[in-house]
Length: 312
Image 1 (spheres, helix red, strand yellow):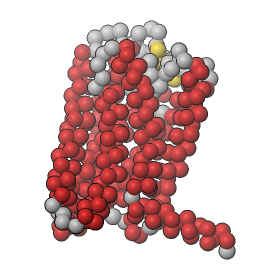
Image 2: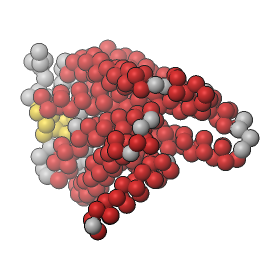
Image 3: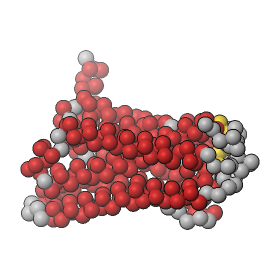
Image 4: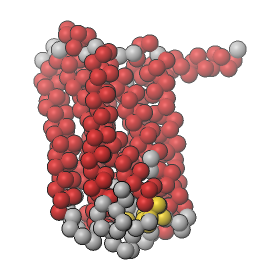
């Protein structure tokens, strides 16, 4: 049941005080969104069509690409409308749906990156037992658990946020309906919501990131014990793409959800929020295509076949 004290809609301010920047941002966001659609769709197609990419690593990578497609599509179209024209309103229902999807998919991505790090750990530190440990049935189980965790987190946090008594001005100082700006919009007591957000941040950000760092610490020790320089380069090459994605994603998300409460930090938080909503999903496919030789070869083979079909 919708809180009767809630407004019928919200005004997403974005960078309203810099209209010239908003037109530039419109072009940037639109360009990045096209890259997201093309790049992540390409990753999914390569993972499905190329038999050499039918492994657990690329199984999880295709899930990450699908996740990024859904994640950005939940907010970027509304963001483009707000950046281009004077209309910045979003209905209460639209904001609720956006918040639910954004929370669910953001949480899912945090957990999925942890699962991918664990997969890399087993591949490098337990290579002889890898096929036994990471079998297809386990991959599907892990993927299901990851998506369920994101759904549960959103089911818990979204209603408590939307039930807050919001201020009459209805102005959300952000591009999207996220938990931090909606809490700041409330004119009532938000201590419970802040505690809830802090606890969620620990379990969804701090704990997964700690597990990722532990996994890569063990991977680094295992790689350094490899006598062959070629073997070391191959092992580091396998992990470097994922580690780059983790760094970009977690640094921007932490800057949004664990920022101090002051206007300067909140203004920076909008830039970081824009980056993890648009920047990271557009860079992920580029990172994996450019830094992963298997994906690069698969792309060349696919393009080669397309050229042959065109010429014939």
